[in-house]
Image (cartoon, rainbow, N blue to C red; front, side, top):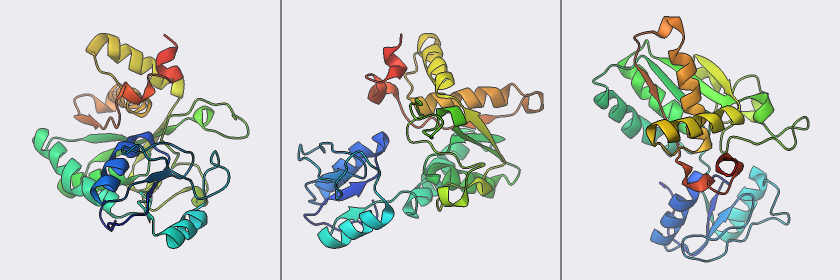
Length: 250
């Protein structure tokens, strides 16, 4: 986590399950004994309880509230949505690894729309090697987003839409301009894919990983993509989802 100085104040992180272990580990290494989330309480790796800097722990904090809290306490906010180290890490590592492992044969990249850092960084590197690379961004179907129309929707954790949303809903790296197309994936489709590959392949996937794989299968079935090498990034495993409807339902 580049740019996070050592100190006693906490590391402030968005409420994304995949970030919790990393933020807790980094906080300990830097001598920061607490980790805090921007949505709700949880305990970090040290066992110390985090205290959100606003009065309603179930509400998503605004960036202004987070900035004010950091100024007041000296906490560090990793802010993946705007931290250049996010896409840079994937430009330096994920992209070259894929290029090497495929021996330079990558025709299509399929990835989720989370903070945008993974896709933006990986796609940037792969396009530097193959300008004809096609990038397909996977985003939640409107039925799988928390909206006034669907207040109780089962969401794909950590995944946000980048297409057909207001400019205000986008971030530095979660944008449609670095991809060529998008696929809307429903949470139920991700659940079905996860159960199918668990039975058939022994792969234990999380919701976003299963959604990405579902979309990649759709891309591979298109006649124009026959014979092409499709790379899909599966961002999480199923360990964090054992208590969720994803694995409780069957």
